[in-house]
Amino acid sequence: MAAVLGVVAGTCAGYLVQADREPTKLPPLSQPTLAQAKGEAPEPLPAAQDRRVRTEGDLRKLLLKKPRGAKNAEWLEGLDGWMDMADYADTYEEPDQAFGDLVGAEFRRVAVTGWSVGNSYSVEIRLVQYRQEEAVAAADAVASQRYGAESDDVRSWPIPGTGDGMAYVHKEPTTEPGYLPLYSAEAHASRGDIALQIWLTGSKPFKKKTVMDLAERQMERL
Image 1 (cartoon, rainbow, N blue to C red):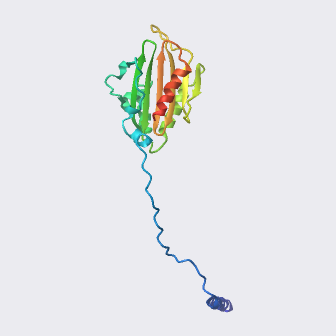
Image 2: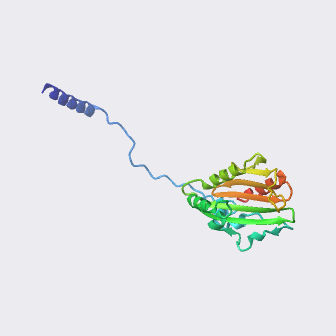
Image 3: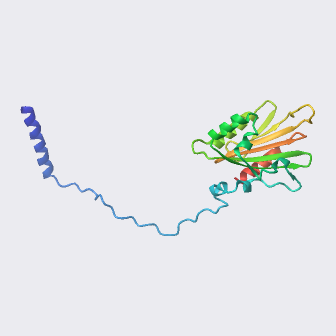
């Protein structure tokens, strides 16, 4: 009982002391409405500077144009500049597995172009776009392509202005019975949801300048 009475007495004393104090001045909970800033809002970016607008449109318009004097690649006939998932999966050594991987990677579409420069060499450029709702699939795709490009007979250089871009020139040609030796070069890079692939094949070894020029000019358009 003594302990209980002590607690009650202490509580009452505390209330009496607080009642004798000057009220603490606190800021009111309600605040006046802040005045809206004056002046015009910034203009939205024009389509030419808004990357999201460009990549949501017709990707084929972002592809490099065929150079003067070059011929359209024969394999482009019937594609209309697009490759669907099945067509794209067929470019891999194991299409069935590639198709399943593309589904998991949230593949969206591929814009493609290509040309041949006389009898010297041919070019193929692909812009592979992913939905990227679950993962950064474009960067992952570039990492996979880079891994496949690395070998003892390759020279490689980073593509300026890209975080993951690399260009490769293979020093040794691919040889098959009954066919002329074929030299190759390639470039891979990503920007946002798009993975860039450039493939070159020709009868002579490629120079660094040839593949780097294509890669840099194509990335500038993305």
